[in-house]
Length: 318
Length: 318
Image 1: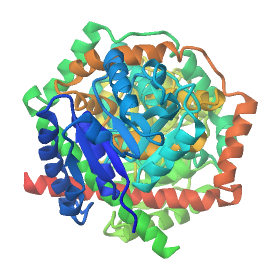
Image 2: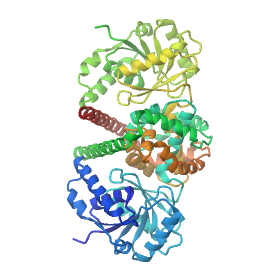
Image 3: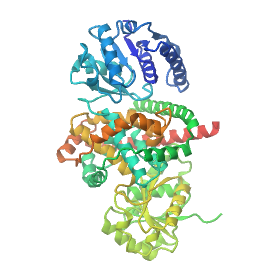
Image 4: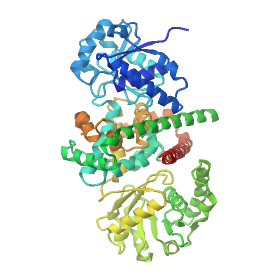
């Protein structure tokens, strides 16, 4: 048996800690480093709690084995030494990421790939100046990555195709579901899709057409019941007897009319934000946000477990 | 014990048949009528199969009791006689719906409400000419309504507030989750939200930014994992430590940039539809569409069962 792949996690906040679980669960050896010397030990304690939650939900069998593969690096150089892959999850600021890339570039070997967890900053903004830039890309997770398997791989103009291939294969190996953009675009795939839906949701509230609670129900008791296991294209492909072209023929005109009524640009105004915040706080007081987030995580674990069990049952009866 | 509420189902295709299950499951007495004399008996056979599926999925206990509450009317007048509520699910054409409304208006009592299942036609287009128009509205379900509880209630300008209140209470009584628009808008809530997301999905494909399969994965393995049990507002409310206003402060600028890049109107072109259809047919040949739709229904039943079990477990530990 060969030695496990080594992964360096640079920046150990919520996102970096989540990545550590993904890679250690996938059998890799994980080395944590953060510019704040207190951050990585703190992350390790959080990781321990999350892995225990995953065991309680029936999603991992051997918590200790996972934890045994995660270690603290004494320095950035030690974390990067001999790493196959670096997952960078530092603060979402171009200057900070660019400075970190300079340091990473000076320390990594010639075969190491570097992925950034950035949700809003394309890799071209902070990797153009480094020698390893062909081996850099964005690898954007959904939080928490150990529950939501999607990873968006977004190359900069100078990212080598082999880098995308290598990181894609690594992500699959550790159980994630990588998706790819062919080039950079604001918000990548996930936040573009979420963004247009949110934009319309805010508009419906601003225009007094529906309440925040009713818009949420329309998704959680309607659209989301299909989108939890099929994407939007498969959904409409199955919503007309003849498939997606048939659907477009039947409903394209309705969607054209909807689109025509959603062209106006609307920034989320301060007054509108206040209004939605106020409606949310009547159903969920601010001091219950943390409890409700913990509930969200438990429900997500149960849903992931449910989907996994169904997939397994279907494979058996095939 | 008083007599059960009588519901008239007019138009017994897929949608009308689904409604029959909802109301009969909810304890109402259901009378089916369709202009095509063969349609209602055919619907009854489909209803029998669907109720058996629901029993197999553990979602109904007593299929025979449900079926015993559904009957065929010999005429439109017989179906409407003494009905508390009429659910109209005929073909999506203004002239057909308007002509039917004239006939319904002539036959119903003074307290009967009339809901239309229309997904694209507002009630103001075909109810303005009838005496009962204050008791008419759109009650738009998601297919199939016995699995997706959302019903969109959309009043015409002349719909009485008491009508909305009465139909909302009835829908809740039979286990649905009614949501309300304050006035008519193209596509109502659900299809507006789905429409803007689809519009962006088609755009990503047309611009060569991502594949149909990867866009579907981004939803089914990412966004949809939360939207299956929380709406978009609750999702972002829990995605920043300080709630939704905090989220808007952190990410509003990213979403503003995304919005700025999605303003251009793009009808779904024939070439684009061909391309997406072709990509879908490589993963799902046309002759497997029906099988996959049956799979979708089984997965949805399992998901609904999963959500119900989790809700019950949470109530117990509270």
